[in-house]
Image (cartoon, rainbow, N blue to C red; front, side, top):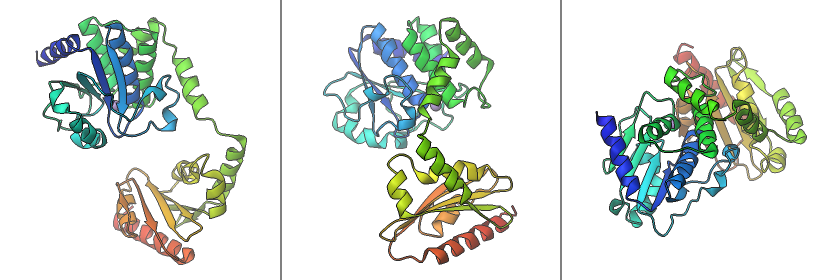
Length: 336
Ligand SMILES: [Mn+2]
């Protein structure tokens, strides 16, 4: 079997290594971080040295993973094997690849472990284990360990389960299979507590009382247009100045705006002291207008998430009017 081939190649590469660089893509998430932290433990149990690297800084919302602060943005001076987790796309290791190239990646063997269905664009890997049917890279790693007889410890099991829970939004996505649940069940049997993992994640989501009150004020100020299809909130400089160091005010409001009955698109505008205006746009499933709407104001993004930035002395009232008018027009054009 091809998969077995790749597994035994991976084992041979790990056996031959002394120091392994564990690399995450430029869009790290709970699965890439949990997979990396689990591999750190698994390889340590194999007597290997490791180094965790990601091209960008770990986002704060992932700080509930013990060891998240061990991920460095700097490449170590020496390593003799690279394991890339949770992507097989060259574009997603752009930040790292430049420095890796400088550090002669091509002279080090590379193992890719992933679960994305997008065709792999890394053609210089020495071994790649890509299981599109797996719910998370962590699930692929768990199965690989069973197959190769690699030992896990408590930290590895907790990191793997937390990674799977993160990628599957708590085991509710449609790629969760019976095999996913068997893997989780085995790790729970060996001591992982789902309740403790969820408590740690939730504790990390807590906000100060001051911020919760501010969120209440923001939510009260949401304006609805066009039969509630468009939700808008405007954040003035005084609030940006006070609350931005704690939390992005736009993000504080956008989720609830999107959850309003009948709302198709949510827009948060921030008005800065120097007249700069930024917009964060999120639209709901079935209304893929976010990208086009932002493009109309010089920005861009994806169908459901986008933004724009305008410099100079803007009249915010007339800008708001044109944004609402354009959003209505796009929603009508999409017949939704
Ligand atoms: Mn993943």
